[in-house]
Image (cartoon, rainbow, N blue to C red):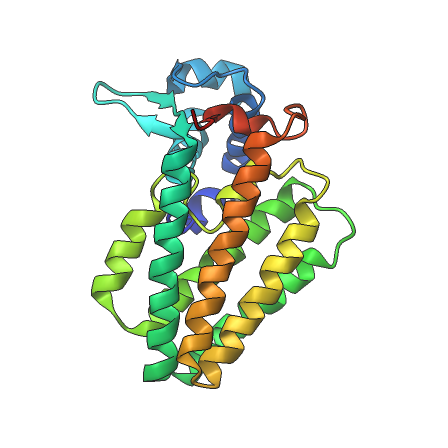
Length: 253
């Protein structure tokens, strides 16, 4: 998943209508009201969601970045479906690349301002997770901060080649660092899983600061395994009403 463009979804910069459209459209997709493979277009959504074309366009672009939609050659978008194997492979590849980037960051050293921004990012996530229950705006803020932290980890390595490859990987279905934040936003265990992920964030930043390359790499690989576990639990869950987004993922065999 690419970084969220602040101008299109950040409620703090006037994107409240885009946020409304994004959340409502995601809800329709994950609830099955817009099933996998169905074609959707901007004009049809204007009446359905009650917002103008500009925020609709921003919401569609954002959901394409999340991997829930695909742009069609003739215009418009279609709801995507995915195989479990494809999603698993994409997450594994992301973990491998992020692990390598973390190791290089630790070995090469990181400028103090970048480390400071990463700490601020984690402090922001701590603030979100301090809430006993997370609403839509809290999840949106978590996604934005989580994506920024992962982008900073890539920046720390100073490798344009690896960063470019990582950007390609995270655009794959459900492979982004926040992919299963979106899918499991309605899960009762979602906040608990985010707390575990946040602990790993702090551990990898500490390893990078301590110049412990092997440890930093191992933590990021483990971080991706948390997403793998969430994938398996989501696909095998019988509670589709609680996690309806898994309808978009086809089970093995």
